[in-house]
Image (cartoon, rainbow, N blue to C red; front, top):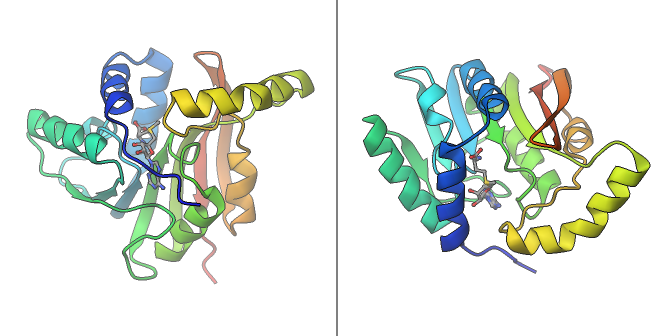
Length: 204
Ligand SMILES: C[S@@+](CC[C@H](N)C(=O)[O-])C[C@H]1O[C@@H](n2cnc3c(N)ncnc32)[C@H](O)[C@@H]1O
C-alpha cells in the first residue's frame, strides 16, 4: 500500500529544526555534504539543509516527494542565492538512467522512505561503478533494551514524524544492497544513535 503523503506541518517543523541544529548534527551534515563530489544526486532533500555546505558550482540534482518540503527548499535556495536543480520524485523509483552519478548524498531520509531496500538498490543503479553513497542516518539502538524500547515507540513516532522509523538497521540494509562500506562512524547525537559514512558501489 502506498503510504506517502505530503506533510505541511512537519515541513514547517523541519524547517525550524534544521535552523536550530546542535553543533554535532551540523558537523555531520557539513562533513557529508563536503564529501560529495562529481555529479551529485541528493535523495529526500527536505528543506535543503545540506545546500549551504555543498561546494559552490557543484553539479547537483536533488529529489523530494513532499510538496511542502519542496516549497520551503525553494525559499531556502533563494535565501542562499543559489540555483538548485530539484525534481519531485521518490527514492524508490528514481527518474534517472543507470550509472549517471558519482555521489548519492542522503541524510536522515532512509529512516522515512517507505521501502529503504528499494531506495538503496535505486541509489546503486544510478551510481557509476566506483561511485559513493554518502550517508548520515539515525538508526535502531544496539542494546537489547534500547532496541526493544525503540521498536515499541516506532508506531507513535512514525505518526508524529511524517513516517520516520527510529528503529531501522540502515547500515545493514546499505551493505545488503551491494555496497562496500568504506567508512562508518557510529555515535549518539541528541540522544539518538547515528551512523555516518561512505559506501561504495563496486567497480566490476
Ligand atoms: C527527516 S526529513 C530529512 C530531510 C533532509 N534529508 C535533511 O537531512 O534535512 C526526511 C525527508 O525524506 C523525504 N521522503 C519521504 N519519503 C521519501 C521517499 N520515498 N523518497 C525520497 N524522499 C522521501 C521526506 O519528504 C523528508 O523531506
